[in-house]
Amino acid sequence: MSNKDTRTVKGNIKISKNENLNNQMGKFQHRVFFFTRKFVYTKKLFRDSIIIAKAVNLIIQNKKL
Image 1 (cartoon, rainbow, N blue to C red):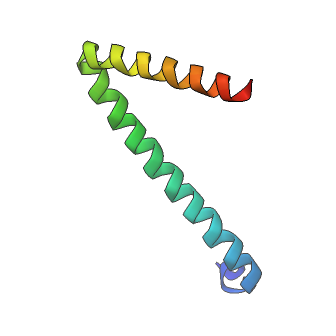
Image 2: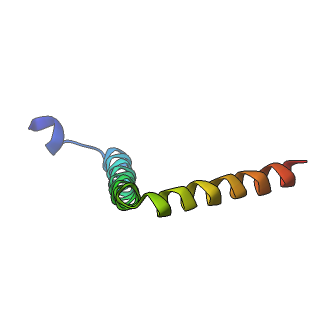
């Protein structure tokens, strides 16, 4: 407990930044999980999403060329 009490301001800033990053990642993963779960239930939509993903990949490849 004494270490936490005697933390520097710099240390606090670092910790708060890490917590924010972790929270954002957690929210993002949560969203992705629900998104994928919805799609797995309906195979037609899942197939459509794969087609869209392939199209997006093609567009990205064309931009690289």
